[in-house]
Length: 164
Length: 383
Image: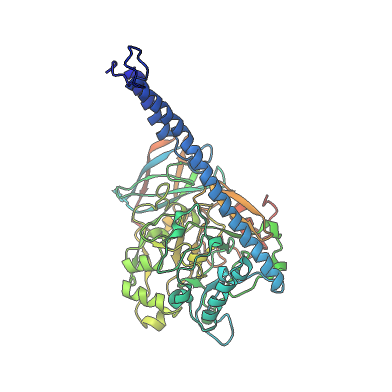
């Protein structure tokens, strides 16, 4: 009888756990691909990688690299993967220089549309500065390609060089 | 324990009437299982009802727009009444389409109050005490619990207007400042500073998106659905910035890449709580969406530094409904658009002012979704 009871309770628990809501819409035929992006052999964190399709689809895919340079490609949702095929790859990573301070930003927000010059005179405007050579941003000039085999892969390598 | 009987009645007889403790527990367990089975169904039914309410709100807003068209010389309302919209005033007001539709959703009294501030060149959400805590139920989607919370004393709104598949240059929070010589443009149903003539919707009113949903900003709870990555305040203020929000080398996929998991942005992304905040405010992050990234995608603000800085915003339609969003068409019909809708190639070249992927005329580059957004793209494949 005790066994029956615990069985019943277990069933109950399983039912409660398993009846979550269904996730978002899923695309068919995607597989998981992950790997590491490096710059001169060092892991590159916070890089945005984009896969530009050349043989499949019109749909592209992409990923952000984490602190250790690791990435996992996604199409619509995190973790949904990519369709196997041939892709051109672009990579961007940059940082801002002459960024506005919080006080300056506050001033901009309250100015009702005044220009940078009106507000700050000759102070240089914030600019984005690339941390990697510019040619990696464009699919036609990056020289990077990935061939994603059927069945997924975990050991992709995107190796960048800082030499122009 | 097996001998622990529950006595029923007072009979001192040897007749053992009642249930054992174990039997009772088994019965309770069975009831538990049944409730466990029923509960998700009840929750789903409740969500379905809420979703129906959201769909109905979209429909009401689309119909209100048609009423507006009838009463205003066959033109659609302004997406945003911005700098210099009324000659001679030169004031910054940024009232959004949700204000102009008030008389057509039976909120005439609220409209009169808002107009009082507008005529004085004042943004009521900055100093309009008598409009504080006014909630327009028809502008709130109950599937999104965030609509119940006030931000700075004003309620958010779940509905955003379409500016199509074009990614306009913007200045600060609003549309382009006409005063600095640039032209405003959007090829969605509604435009800033320009009342779109109904006749200019040559793609057909049933093929052109007018209004959709957004998950609204809530203080302290930013997700990719209600936040905007790389907003100026955060990016430039913090001085860190995020590479994906740099205009050079940016494509819509780069914005989609920022989706970290089912709710949040990827780690390291700076986010501003922006979407749907303040129902009266017509500035882009608060009251517009574009048909570039599929429903339930992140929102990004790119570039846009200073007067001459080109800037684009990708603002997505988002909802808590499973798998997509409701979209109201100009003709008043409502479609549920799936997250898997064809958006064309999102990895193309840099987007900008009429360069690369964003076009001012001709067939949209963003597939069926882009075609639904443009009012005069001439696409044939929107069904």
